[in-house]
Length: 189
Image: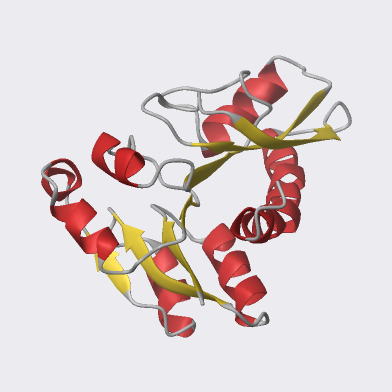
Protein backbone atom coordinates (compact mmCIF):
# COMPACT_ATOMS: atom_id res chain seq x y z
CA UNK A 1 0.00 0.00 0.00
CA UNK A 2 1.40 3.41 -1.01
CA UNK A 3 0.57 6.08 1.55
CA UNK A 4 -0.24 9.67 0.62
CA UNK A 5 -0.55 12.51 3.09
CA UNK A 6 -1.96 15.89 2.18
CA UNK A 7 -1.30 19.37 3.54
CA UNK A 8 -3.98 22.00 2.94
CA UNK A 9 -4.93 25.38 4.39
CA UNK A 10 -8.20 26.16 2.63
CA UNK A 11 -11.31 24.82 1.02
CA UNK A 12 -9.82 21.55 -0.08
CA UNK A 13 -10.95 21.16 -3.69
CA UNK A 14 -7.62 19.58 -4.65
CA UNK A 15 -7.72 17.39 -1.53
CA UNK A 16 -11.23 16.32 -2.55
CA UNK A 17 -10.12 15.44 -6.08
CA UNK A 18 -7.08 13.51 -4.83
CA UNK A 19 -9.15 11.55 -2.29
CA UNK A 20 -11.74 10.69 -4.95
CA UNK A 21 -9.07 9.65 -7.45
CA UNK A 22 -7.16 7.36 -5.11
CA UNK A 23 -10.34 6.07 -3.49
CA UNK A 24 -10.99 4.31 -6.81
CA UNK A 25 -7.53 2.73 -7.14
CA UNK A 26 -6.09 -0.30 -5.42
CA UNK A 27 -2.70 -0.06 -3.80
CA UNK A 28 -2.94 3.59 -2.70
CA UNK A 29 -4.52 5.40 0.21
CA UNK A 30 -4.69 8.91 1.54
CA UNK A 31 -3.62 8.33 5.14
CA UNK A 32 -4.09 11.80 6.54
CA UNK A 33 -4.79 15.47 6.00
CA UNK A 34 -2.58 17.98 7.82
CA UNK A 35 -3.72 21.58 8.19
CA UNK A 36 -2.68 24.74 9.96
CA UNK A 37 -6.23 26.09 9.77
CA UNK A 38 -8.82 24.69 12.19
CA UNK A 39 -11.55 26.20 9.96
CA UNK A 40 -10.23 24.76 6.68
CA UNK A 41 -12.90 23.28 4.44
CA UNK A 42 -10.39 20.53 3.71
CA UNK A 43 -11.17 19.04 7.15
CA UNK A 44 -14.80 18.37 6.16
CA UNK A 45 -13.53 16.89 2.88
CA UNK A 46 -11.25 14.54 4.82
CA UNK A 47 -14.07 13.61 7.21
CA UNK A 48 -16.31 12.72 4.27
CA UNK A 49 -13.63 10.31 3.01
CA UNK A 50 -12.86 8.84 6.46
CA UNK A 51 -9.39 10.38 6.35
CA UNK A 52 -8.07 11.58 9.72
CA UNK A 53 -7.13 15.25 10.06
CA UNK A 54 -4.24 16.68 12.04
CA UNK A 55 -4.42 20.35 12.99
CA UNK A 56 -1.12 21.92 13.98
CA UNK A 57 0.27 25.26 15.09
CA UNK A 58 3.16 27.29 13.70
CA UNK A 59 5.21 26.25 16.74
CA UNK A 60 4.57 22.54 16.02
CA UNK A 61 5.50 23.15 12.38
CA UNK A 62 8.94 24.35 13.40
CA UNK A 63 9.85 22.49 16.61
CA UNK A 64 10.00 18.91 15.28
CA UNK A 65 6.54 17.93 16.56
CA UNK A 66 5.08 17.91 13.06
CA UNK A 67 7.88 15.73 11.67
CA UNK A 68 7.23 13.15 14.40
CA UNK A 69 3.52 13.21 13.55
CA UNK A 70 4.16 12.87 9.80
CA UNK A 71 6.42 9.84 10.38
CA UNK A 72 3.54 8.03 12.10
CA UNK A 73 1.66 8.06 8.78
CA UNK A 74 4.55 6.41 6.90
CA UNK A 75 4.14 8.54 3.74
CA UNK A 76 5.45 7.52 0.36
CA UNK A 77 4.62 11.02 -0.86
CA UNK A 78 3.65 14.30 0.83
CA UNK A 79 1.37 16.51 -1.24
CA UNK A 80 0.86 20.22 -0.64
CA UNK A 81 -2.62 20.90 -1.96
CA UNK A 82 -3.19 24.55 -1.15
CA UNK A 83 -0.91 24.72 1.87
CA UNK A 84 0.09 28.32 2.47
CA UNK A 85 2.89 28.24 5.03
CA UNK A 86 6.53 27.72 4.20
CA UNK A 87 7.17 24.00 4.48
CA UNK A 88 9.59 22.95 7.24
CA UNK A 89 13.13 22.01 6.26
CA UNK A 90 13.25 19.02 8.63
CA UNK A 91 10.41 17.26 6.76
CA UNK A 92 11.94 18.09 3.36
CA UNK A 93 15.26 16.65 4.55
CA UNK A 94 13.60 13.51 5.95
CA UNK A 95 11.64 12.93 2.71
CA UNK A 96 13.88 14.08 -0.17
CA UNK A 97 12.06 14.19 -3.54
CA UNK A 98 8.88 13.06 -1.81
CA UNK A 99 7.29 16.45 -1.07
CA UNK A 100 5.44 18.08 -3.97
CA UNK A 101 3.35 21.19 -4.44
CA UNK A 102 0.99 22.58 -7.04
CA UNK A 103 1.17 26.26 -7.92
CA UNK A 104 -1.56 28.08 -9.88
CA UNK A 105 0.81 29.75 -12.38
CA UNK A 106 3.59 28.91 -14.77
CA UNK A 107 6.61 29.26 -12.51
CA UNK A 108 8.89 31.12 -12.23
CA UNK A 109 6.16 33.66 -13.02
CA UNK A 110 4.00 34.68 -10.08
CA UNK A 111 5.82 32.58 -7.49
CA UNK A 112 7.04 33.36 -4.01
CA UNK A 113 5.62 34.39 -0.68
CA UNK A 114 2.10 35.78 -0.92
CA UNK A 115 1.57 34.50 -4.45
CA UNK A 116 -1.27 32.03 -4.09
CA UNK A 117 -4.88 31.67 -5.17
CA UNK A 118 -6.62 34.83 -6.30
CA UNK A 119 -3.47 36.90 -5.71
CA UNK A 120 -1.90 35.02 -8.63
CA UNK A 121 -5.00 35.13 -10.85
CA UNK A 122 -5.47 38.88 -10.29
CA UNK A 123 -1.83 39.52 -11.23
CA UNK A 124 -2.14 37.40 -14.38
CA UNK A 125 -5.33 39.23 -15.38
CA UNK A 126 -4.01 42.72 -14.57
CA UNK A 127 -0.84 42.05 -16.57
CA UNK A 128 -2.94 40.85 -19.52
CA UNK A 129 -0.90 37.66 -19.86
CA UNK A 130 -1.82 35.49 -22.82
CA UNK A 131 -1.53 32.30 -20.80
CA UNK A 132 -1.35 30.94 -17.29
CA UNK A 133 -1.54 27.45 -15.92
CA UNK A 134 -0.18 25.14 -13.29
CA UNK A 135 3.22 24.04 -12.10
CA UNK A 136 3.65 20.83 -10.13
CA UNK A 137 7.06 20.88 -8.50
CA UNK A 138 9.21 19.40 -5.77
CA UNK A 139 9.35 21.43 -2.58
CA UNK A 140 12.66 22.80 -1.37
CA UNK A 141 13.57 25.36 1.29
CA UNK A 142 12.40 28.31 -0.87
CA UNK A 143 8.85 29.21 -1.92
CA UNK A 144 8.04 27.84 -5.38
CA UNK A 145 11.66 27.19 -6.41
CA UNK A 146 11.85 23.37 -6.41
CA UNK A 147 12.46 21.42 -9.60
CA UNK A 148 9.49 21.40 -11.97
CA UNK A 149 7.75 18.07 -12.53
CA UNK A 150 4.99 19.24 -14.89
CA UNK A 151 3.61 22.45 -16.32
CA UNK A 152 0.36 22.81 -18.24
CA UNK A 153 -0.90 26.04 -19.76
CA UNK A 154 -4.27 27.50 -20.70
CA UNK A 155 -5.09 30.59 -22.77
CA UNK A 156 -6.41 33.41 -20.63
CA UNK A 157 -6.62 36.30 -23.09
CA UNK A 158 -10.38 35.67 -23.46
CA UNK A 159 -10.95 35.70 -19.68
CA UNK A 160 -12.92 38.71 -18.54
CA UNK A 161 -11.99 38.46 -14.87
CA UNK A 162 -9.49 36.91 -12.46
CA UNK A 163 -12.29 34.55 -11.41
CA UNK A 164 -12.49 33.16 -14.96
CA UNK A 165 -8.71 32.64 -14.92
CA UNK A 166 -9.07 30.85 -11.58
CA UNK A 167 -11.73 28.45 -12.93
CA UNK A 168 -9.62 27.50 -15.94
CA UNK A 169 -6.52 26.95 -13.82
CA UNK A 170 -8.43 24.94 -11.21
CA UNK A 171 -9.70 22.66 -13.96
CA UNK A 172 -6.07 21.94 -14.93
CA UNK A 173 -5.16 21.28 -11.29
CA UNK A 174 -7.95 18.75 -10.85
CA UNK A 175 -7.12 17.02 -14.12
CA UNK A 176 -3.36 16.66 -13.70
CA UNK A 177 -2.44 16.67 -9.99
CA UNK A 178 -3.75 13.19 -9.09
CA UNK A 179 -2.23 11.67 -12.22
CA UNK A 180 1.20 13.14 -11.45
CA UNK A 181 1.01 11.87 -7.86
CA UNK A 182 0.23 8.38 -9.15
CA UNK A 183 3.08 8.54 -11.67
CA UNK A 184 5.52 9.65 -8.98
CA UNK A 185 4.42 6.83 -6.71
CA UNK A 186 5.05 4.45 -9.57
CA UNK A 187 8.28 6.30 -10.60
CA UNK A 188 6.96 7.11 -14.08
CA UNK A 189 7.87 10.82 -14.01
